[in-house]
Length: 288
Length: 193
Image 1 (cartoon, each protein chain N blue to C red):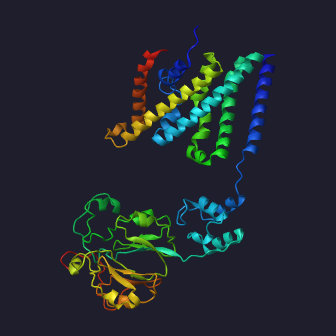
Image 2: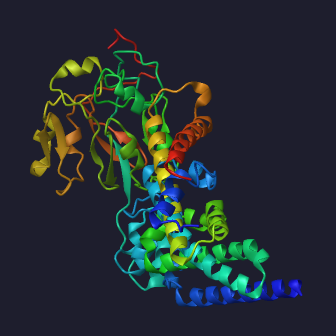
Image 3: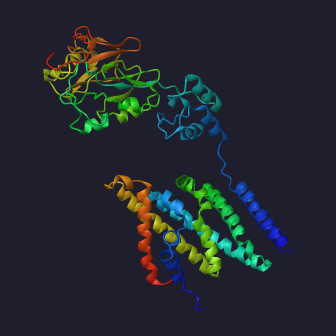
């Protein structure tokens, strides 16, 4: 008899609760647009944040609600963006590919250290100790924080201890921009080829003791550039990219090769009058 | 026996017989979710909420079980009720406040297996509390749980910056603090029993 009571009570209880849960599940179901899941499937799942949203899912929600266009995702291949655009019946909204650009040319073949740093091998740590050991206060420290933080393996450190960005792999997510304690990285459309490859704010040639490719603020590039394309601000040339900047004239007379032309295939092109540095090893103190 | 006042029940559940530090119930979230004050507060809130609902349901179930003469089914019925309540609460919060749902995250479904809640409903039945008394008891237990979690989280936040011996770092230190906290809560025994 007791067993029957137990069975009956528990049976009733279970069915009652199951019923409540089923009803609640139906009533309280949160209806989400099924397209959000579909669009999220088509996105690259990297959650890198390059689009300006916290991850791929919020971006998918924004896409479905029509706030953005698929072109904002810089990681998807073109076919992926086209597929999303077709699925949602919107334009791709293609944006020009952007990449991270480094504003320092001071590898250890041209730049000197004024102190030896023996701490944790990271730029963030080194920069806390009087700005790191580099002769130029503004220059790349070369411990590769940017290489470590890049999720896409787009940054590799070259033999001179400078990061090199693989523009095919770079998605302009901005992680390296945040990682660099010297603020050397910035995101630029790939068409920005006229490039100031230095962040040194000191005027004069004294800096050349520390780094042979530093900008000495001589101002020749600003003088040569057509249409006031370049202005000198804080002892550095600043390119006004809103003007026509597809010209190699400004780089020609640069004595140190601090302003350069970035070519997709040939790499960094320096002006005709910039001094040639062919040193393959590390620059030693006392040799200039 | 003179019926206990609500105030007495509340103080008893929250301080004198604190669920975490005196009964050692709900140690899992006490150690797991006490890293940050913010999450500790939210966890405490969620547990209190489920405690109140579970206490209400358990009161009803207990009446039913006594009516059909099967009080030995208390334990198993409570487990079933608590599990479904948590499910229901989860669905409800997801529908009503997606922000809160996201903030609570995995803690919400994990309350299902929180022994402090099962302990609460069993104690309340054993003590023979009425409907209102049960609710006050649940509120007190929840407040006590939140208090313990917040104390622990505050201490752990401070200790993150303190120099502690190498051997005591991490879980060891957490357990040591838990022990000392528990000892200090024994001091509340003088308030009543």
